[in-house]
Amino acid sequence: MNSAQDDLDARLRERVLLSRPAQDDRLMLADATLLAALDGTRPLTPNERQALAASPLTLRRFRQLSLQHHAAAQVPVAAANDPVWTGSRGMLRAASTATELEALVTDDGCWTLHFLPQDGGWQVILALSAEAPFAARLLREQPLLRVIDGGGAIVLQGRLDADGECERVWPFAVGPGSHFQLYGAGFAVEPVAP
Image (cartoon, rainbow, N blue to C red; front, side, top):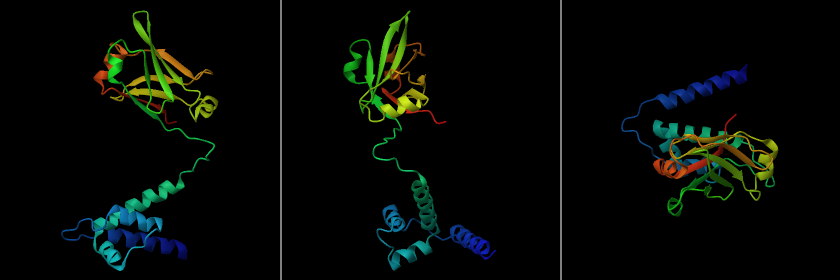
């Protein structure tokens, strides 16, 4: 009961501190200073603590950074021998526009998009490089993947087969080269959130 009361008192004090108005309030401390205090690498000086207490805006920023810091600490860290992949990006290069586009490679070299003419349209094939540090894991876990263009439209979505490839019909009216040029020449390969 006492712990619950203490928790309630702390929340009420926090609410009062964060909601009180202050004339000409502005951020009094840089994020780097606040983050150093949260990390414990550098404590706040007495003047910095006074500035923090006097500025509700700075106090709200400190609270937000604290919540983000706490949330980041809760994310499990992958082991060095268990690489985690969160996405790869690539660009259509100027040299690719001279002839019909045949392939695009992500900046990290882990993925290739192949474009094959088929029945008046195109087939798009996403291929995972066997040298990618996360290749074994993706082939084992078979996550749902997607390729998006620079505008966010889905070019391809599916799971890799045993050869590390996923193939679909090109979903747009214009050819791959023209399409990517229309949408900023960028593309991304990413896991689809469950």
